[in-house]
Length: 435
Ligand SMILES: [Zn+2]
Image (cartoon, rainbow, N blue to C red; front, side, top):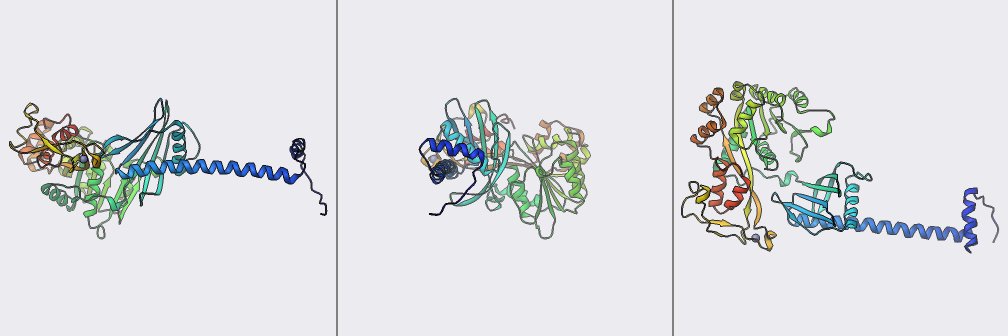
C-alpha cells in the first residue's frame, strides 16, 4: 500500500498521542472509535427524544379520548400531576415522574418552537398536530413555579367544530332571539358572563349567520381562536403595542358593516363601540358581568352616557355553561329543594335527576355541556329606566316583568327536563340564586 503524507494540526496531535498510549496505533482506529462513540451518543439522544415525543403523544391521545379542552401538567413535591379540563372541570390523569416531566416539557417547547430556556414565561402555538386522527392547533403556556415548570396546553377548535346556535341546544325562544339579533342592520349586541362560559362561541355562531358575501365583517380579537370564512379577523397579539381602541379606529376606516370587538374592558373601547353602533354598524362584543341587566349598567359605570347606551344597545345576552347529565348513569333525584327556595321555579311532581358516574363519563356523572341564556332586549320601559339611573335590582324586576327568563330559570328548566342536575345549575350560578 503506497504511503500518503497527511498533516495533523498540533492540537490534534495530543489526541493521537494519547490514543497511541492506549494501544491504538493507527489514525483509522482512532477515527473508527470516535465515530462509534458519536453514533452511539446520537442514537441514545434520538431514542430519548423519541421516547419524550411518544410520552407527549400518549398524554394528548388520552386528552382527546375524553374530549378535554385543556391539559395541565404541574410539578408536585413528588412527581407531576396531569389533569384534563373536561366540560369545564379538571380531572386527574396518570402522574409523571420527574424524568418524564422534564422529557414532556422539552417536547412541548420543541414543538412550540421555543427550544431551550428554563424558568421563563413562554407562550407559543403548536400547529397542525395530529391527535387521534384529527388535526388540531394548540396554544402552549409555560410558567415557572417554585416546584418547577408548569405547562398548560389549550386545544384550539377549528371552524368545523364550532357550534352554531342550534347546536348549542339553545331553547326555541332563545335561539329565535339570537337569530333575530344577528339579522339586525345596526346596533350593539353584547354577550356577558364569566371567562370560559362560551361567550365567544355564541358570538361566532351569530357571525356565521350573517350574509358575509354581501356584508363586510371585521373583528379584532385577543387572540383569534377560530377562523371564519370571509371575515377579516385581526389578532391583537400580533400587533405590538396595539390596543383595542387603536385597531378599532383603523377598522372603522375600512368600511365594515359588522364589527366584533373581542372585549370591552375600558371606557374608550366602549365609547367607540357605542358610537359605531349608532352610525350604522352592527357591533358585537363581550363584557364581563354576571347577568344581562348588570352588563347594561356596567357600560354606564365605566363612563358611557346613559343616552348613548339607550340609543346603541339592541340586545344583551347573559350566558353560562352547565354540564349535561350522563344519559347512561343519571338517576332519580328525590331531594327536596324547599330549603333553597327553589320550589317556586320547579313545578311539583316534576322528576329531577342527579349525577352518579360510570365508565362512559369517567365517573363524573356528566358528559358534554349546554348553554344557559338570558336575553334582554331593551324595551322603551327598560330604556327609560336606564335614563332614570335605576339600580340593578329594579332593572332585573322590569326585565323579568317583560318576560326575560333569567339564567337561573333557564337552568332549572333544563334540570326539570332532565338535561342537567339542580346541583350543577347551583354550582354554576353560585351567588346568583336570588336572581
Ligand atoms: Zn355516566
